[in-house]
Amino acid sequence: MKRADAWGVPGLLGLAMLANAAMVPLVPYALATRLGWPLWLVGAYSFAVMVVTMVVNHRLSSIVDTAKRRSILCLICGVAQAAAALAAMGALNGAVWVLVLAIFGTAVGGAAAPIYYTLGRLITEADGRDSSTVNSILRVVTSAAWVVGPAISFSIVGSHGITAAFAAIAAMAGVGALVVLFAASWLDERSARGTGSSVATNPAGNDTISQPRSARLVMPHLPAFAVVFLFSFAHIATATSLPLLLVRHFTIPESATGLFLGVKAAVEMVAILATPLLMRRWGTRVALTVSGILALVAYGSFLLGPSAGWGAALIGSVFEGAYYGTFAATALTWVQSLPGMRLGRATGFYMNGIYAGVLIGAPVSGFVATYNLAGIVVLSLLAAVGAFAALRAAFGIANVREAQ
Image (cartoon, rainbow, N blue to C red; front, top):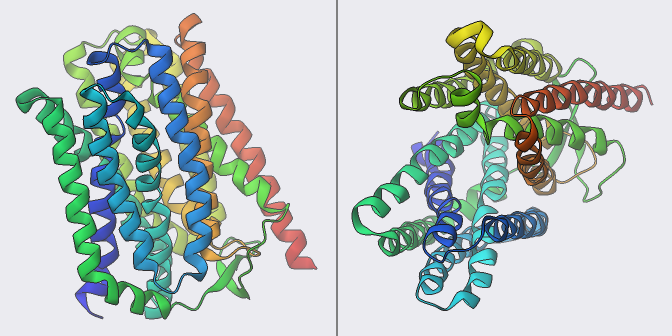
């Protein structure tokens, strides 16, 4: 196997996600601190970006199934991300109307993730490699980009100004687009070798049953969407307010908060890489169940508060990272293996479940935290319990389909 076949897609994904991760949190910050927008209006901008991202993601994920030159979709994402950064620069200089371009450009740039997840799976199928391992690598690359990207952009803001930061993001996206141009023939040729078959999940949770893919979205997929949505909702509901929760609920000094967040991110990436071993040994059903148990332990620890001391906060941070990492790696392969959908649409289906959890979880947790900070943990706990019920329903439908 050539080195390019193993690391080509993760490398291209890393370049695309680095620019996107650097961009997404910077624009709302610029609107609030440079243009003086009220926070509700900043929130409306972020809401618009997420909604458009879901629509674009659905459309491009469907196109990637039948596109003859899939590299063009990757190129469009890179160019759109560069255009979004340039539009943000224009908005800082008074042309606020170009924020419309920033919204659409950021949304198209974010759609690169499911496209590369699909291409990675297709190339994996062509090589006969384990799809869960490749998916885990792609997921950990995405997580790493979201750790490094904002750090780079805000570092540039502090040293050279916010305009320079947007210029750097445009340059990063441009480099990513150029690399796609150089790799286009390889990307198109290798992804075209993918079988395009669908691998259904049997009652034991192992991927064994090959079926032809279709473009249909059927009712049995809805519990699977609920699983992804609720686990994502549980994660984002607490994660968005975690620094505040650590400082006010656990009375942890602000100087130590970054350590807890760093531990959580590190454990999450380790869990993503380790999850394929769990899946190969016990299957997707057990892996998702383990993820849910870890979530309950995490949010239960966060709920204890000051009476349990820093230890509970550290346990909560570790288990939250382990839960979300296990879920993220398992659910991608699981949803891609659902019968009745083409690979690209299934991948977009997974990503929209994640995005829907973010879209709803962030504002709801903010509303709850306004009245009771610990309430956001209860919210996450309830969502995790709901995910358990949805998981049971999803595999119950799989059992019925198998019996038929």
